[in-house]
Length: 545
Image 1 (cartoon, rainbow, N blue to C red):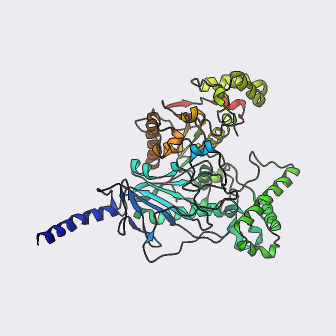
Image 2 (cartoon, helix red, strand yellow; image 1 turned 135 degrees about the vertical axis):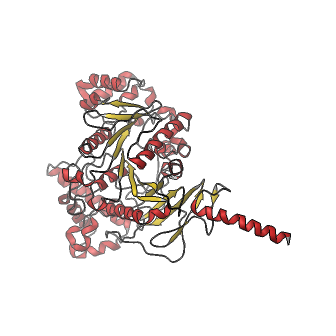
Image 3 (cartoon, rainbow, N blue to C red; image 1 turned 180 degrees about the horizontal axis):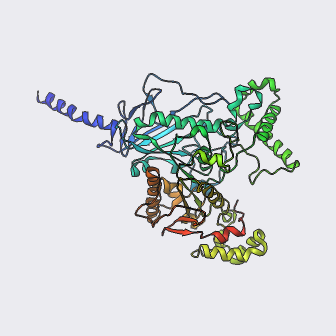
């Protein structure tokens, strides 16, 4: 009898723990899994994740479905509880990774995932579910230009730590890319009208899913911040100019988003679409056959078509920008009706606060040198003379004024001009709107591999996500990295919560205006400066690509 009483008492005591696993941090172990753990209802059916270190985690949830070159639609519903504990498929790459450079792969530590065209999936991290709380929601858009990448590609993308630190709901998204996301077949009938920007339409569909479902995951659908880096930053800027995305997000962060200022014109993209059909041996009346072409064959035809049209444009004397032709957003009547620089485009998200910036070194010239630390001042100056001619001495003087603590000769070669200029241009355009703009520059120098990687492209991401421990190969994992990550991640969290990145760990961070040039420099000693690199940028871009 005593045994039965004891078992009954244990059962009564464990009931609260089972309930806690549904709504808040479990109290027994770092990991909680099971049939009734982390179950949340969505519009399509229930999903089951897991709880790790008090954070509810769900991966690979379908937010939409789409046939090739067709617009996304609602995903199919399911009757049973759907297991959602592992990352979903990633969009196939036009150039699959078969080899890597050992050193840089050590630093970045990619997870390439598994490819499948059915890749419209998202992931969610939250400190509580089914609890009616209204946490800020942060939707992460991955890098990789508009051609590659995924929500799991880098360890820095993991949302557990920022969710735990800031009590925010972190969402990350996979979507169609490259030829699958941007092949313009609109000349071949109404059926293919939406093929032009399928990739961006996927992102709008993901934000619609967030609006409908995120409250059950503990998030506030009326306080959503979209943020992304590199190509992801470009996607953020695109969504700022997308009428159908208006109201689906309320704040935006662009990190090194130098691809976001120009959409392709359909006069060009329709030529690429026609060239793809030609490369596949299809007549216009056979356009539907493209649905069945194996992806590898389609991708190869797409690469040949882009080169063909690019050569044609060159022969016609038409400019194609620094990167030439590539897959990306297309100006399209109705969906993307304006170029980002047009006033009508800026009006779409005029009330959305913006946080924008870049890293000091982005794509660094010194990484192409056998030993950049052995570079002499004369060798560095010789390279600058090739870039700047008789302005080399003025450029060196301007750099030393902007960054007086730099001491290596290679420091003269590594300061980015392209992404910094793009960020300033975007901020200047945004500053004419009523919503505030805040500018940053990530200048912290990583000690990894004798300091060769400095503040390279992507270096700020582990700091934003508070993921120093997950990214020691990139950050070194030292005390200084942890201290700076605390400051950077808190700024992103505060901005997502209120539209203002200020907090007590930083000096006062003013709103940016073209007149004040206010920029927060993130380093071991964070400081706001005003137009600190104006003279550098006035001389001309350094060739860091």
